[in-house]
Length: 147
Image (cartoon, rainbow, N blue to C red):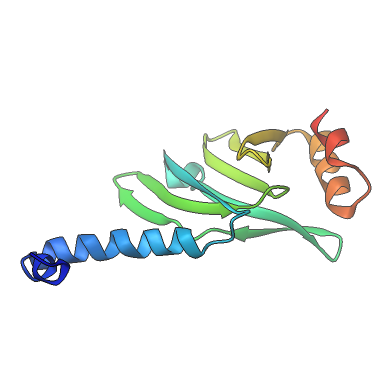
């Protein structure tokens, strides 16, 4: 049996599933080799903070966020955000896993050459956030930031 015969014998559902697998595989193969793929999944009450992942950068001396397009599934008084996001070594990623009425659960992570995510700032730590801003402006080295 040839590959064509194998494909013709699959159901529509099986073909759609195979198509998604092939698209994901091709996306990973064509992706920049210096770019890593990470999985994200978090659930929270949307009134207390919708989870997200965003890449941080500086533009006109202001900290900006580029949000990743992740899937949202709503339930009764909750939302689950899931999907994959990409980052290169040297990027700083903001991850919000949720929150409460009083606290926002967000942190900033530096992406290393080894695909590690090293926490460089908590959202409540103004000094650490200032250090990240200095890193973006070139006023601080990565070694100083990670101390």
